[in-house]
Image (cartoon, rainbow, N blue to C red):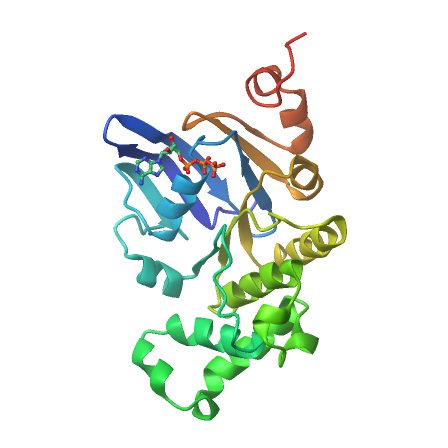
Length: 250
Ligand SMILES: Nc1ncnc2c1ncn2[C@@H]1O[C@H](COP(=O)(O)OP(=O)(O)OP(=O)(O)O)[C@@H](O)[C@H]1O
């Protein structure tokens, strides 16, 4: 097993009297898709929001490459290589596919005001956008207006926008939501390719897809991890079957 790229140790988040995430510990490795599953309100989005830096942890530690980043702001974490996608689509529909990626690349730089420079002069951002679209399988759509893409291709574009920021860790919040079978297949193929060079955390409700793509699965119930293991271990775990998969314990 490789050394973890992102280590999460006893991460906790309270909202008043509610403990949304309770002492969660997990590791993300390059070469692995690590899925986090759980029923509605289990704390999955809150966990991702803490890892990306959108909300602060109440307790616990997040380390990237062994360096404590718990107190770092979201913008700094993004520059350090922690990228995320969102549950809802965040593209600019009236801009081209390429422009969306270029803007994402520029926004992630240490000089965000460069966003006002002529796009032609932003050679680095253009190159990042080209590479991200290639990696996400969208190079042929670069000139299309983003809003005219299919729903599945728009979710692919969101992954491309994330890739344009040169992340090493990908935090993906329900990337398969609303997708048909063919679009799901395309996204899973993309994730299988990306995991060779990234550590991927996948929050997803589509259990068929999770069990197809995940190398490791963490199961959360009411903010607490009740099991972590490979798909076979999780499928056979009696506690998981009772608490989450809705089956009686035999
Ligand atoms: N900003 C907030 N203020 C108060 N409570 C919150 C806040 N954000 C989340 N919660 C609560 O924390 C708990 C965990 O929510 P969270 O959205 O992380 O769950 P989830 O597993 O992502 O659910 P879903 O699958 O429905 O997206 C829920 O009880 C939710 O109501």
